[in-house]
Structure formats: structure tokens, C-alpha cells
Figure 1 (spheres, rainbow, N blue to C red):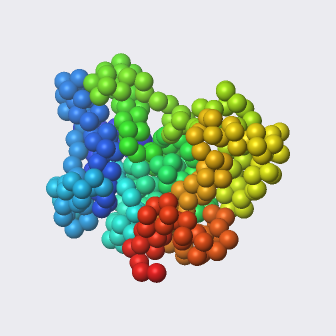
Figure 2 (figure 1 turned 45 degrees about the vertical axis):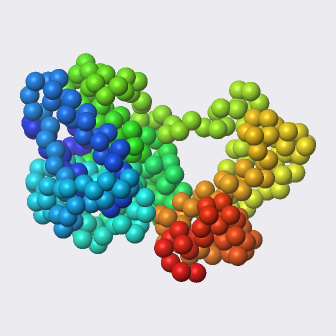
Figure 3 (figure 1 turned 135 degrees about the horizontal axis):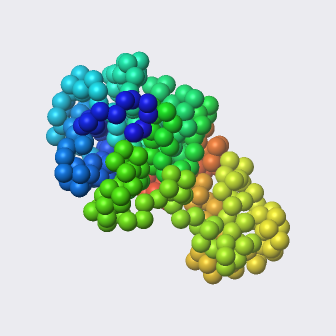
Length: 322
């Protein structure tokens, strides 16, 4: 059980879809429930799919999902799970935010898959709660909601709110819930059914760290990577980075080419551009602000670098004319 709602069978789930929602996250959340019903020989869980207006919704992979109804059709006892995906800022409607606030006032568990943590935060439902989101969205999430307790974990369950990184982390979320409700043995059976036998703990890293991959082979290179990631807004020179980890610039360049197959300046620029793209897609920050926050000397230089790397300008990425 996620929060403090009294346990009643069957548990009813209402999956609320945001345009461009992640199909793999939705499937990863539903399939464990289906297998739990099969393994327990009774209907422990029920689920339906909803969207504002009750209209079908396009997933991020282009598949159109037919829904069971409008937000007003969601049962009063349902555990609400909002499913997000790319461009969450633009795809969040005022109607959905108002409805979530109303449901929260009446109590009950409300959660989010993937970037839908942004929706719960915007509705004010994650105040004084730990929360997480997909690693690609973390920088933008923290930029938008600096006062929230945002972690890098796969799963966060805090009282009557739950969030997860999305994608296959939704399996870990649901199996964790099933274990608490129906026991570890049945939960292991569910994991085997979905071919996910190694259920990850909530605190496990969302992705394999590049620093972790190279750290055992060359600690100084791992430190250089860490230094770059912690100095995106005010980039250091390669000489400063090399000196801080006990290397010459030439030694550091050789290590980057040997272990990463690229020059350190290219890797550093790509880190800053990836952070910039997250801010472009998931925040309302001005392009000029994003350029500064990602260490570019001017908006024009940032725009050129962005276009060279992503093959379109940051303005076009956001869907506005420059």
C-alpha cells in the first residue's frame, strides 16, 4: 500500500494520461497488477485509463490510446497514477491540476510515473514530500521546484504520495507495493512473470554512472568527469580540471580518448548541451537564461552549438520562432 488509505480489495487504480505519455511506463505499471491477479487466483487489482475530456491520447511513441473516461469518471476510491512523458510543461492542463487538487483534498493515494512528478509538484501535492523523476528531467525539475525534496532514486513513497523514474522503474514500484500487500513470495512470482527477476531497491541508481564505469580503471578520470558535471553553469578550463585531479592537460586528453573515445572539451560541451535541452523541453526559462545557466558566453553562441548538436535551434525545439 502506498499511503495510509485502508486496504480494501480489490485495489482500484486510475491511470491518468498526459499527452506524449511514456507507453513503456504505463505498461510496466499495469502488467504486474495483471500477473498478481493471476497468481493469487482472485481479482486483487482493477485498473482503468482516463484523460481530461475523456478523449484518446497519443503516447510519445505515436500510438494512440483509447481511454475509459473523463477525470470526473474516476472512482472515488481509486489510487491515482498520472503518466507523463516529454514536454510535460506544455502538456499539463489547468483542468488536470484543479482536479488533482480537489482529489487531494478528499484524501487518498496519488502518484506519478516518469515526468508526471512535475504535474503533482505544480498542483502543490509534493510539498513536504520526497519525490523523484526520470534522470533526464531532474535538472529541469529542480530548476522549476527548488523548494522540493527531489532525489535521484528509482522510487519515492512518502505517505500518500509516490513517484518513480518511469520506464521499467514502474515495475519496481508495483512489485514493491505487491510485496507489501500480498507478500514477498507472490511478488517474486510477479517479477518472474515479467522477466524482471532482480527487482531493484528504491535507492538504486537510475542509470549506470559513467564515472562508475571508468572509476575502477582510472580514478583520476572519474574525478575529472565528476568535476565537469558539477561545473556546468561556470565551466572550468581543461587546465583547471586537469590540475584539480593531479593530471596534466595532455594526460587528461589521452585518458578521455582512450576510455571515452572523445576529446574532453567535446564531452564537456555535450554535458552542458544535454542539460540545456532538458531545460528547453521541461521549463519555461528564457533561452537566454538557459544559455547562461549552462555556461555559454552568449545566446548566439549557445544557439549555434545547440543547432550543430541537435540539428535544430533551441527555439524550434521548443516550438517557437526565433
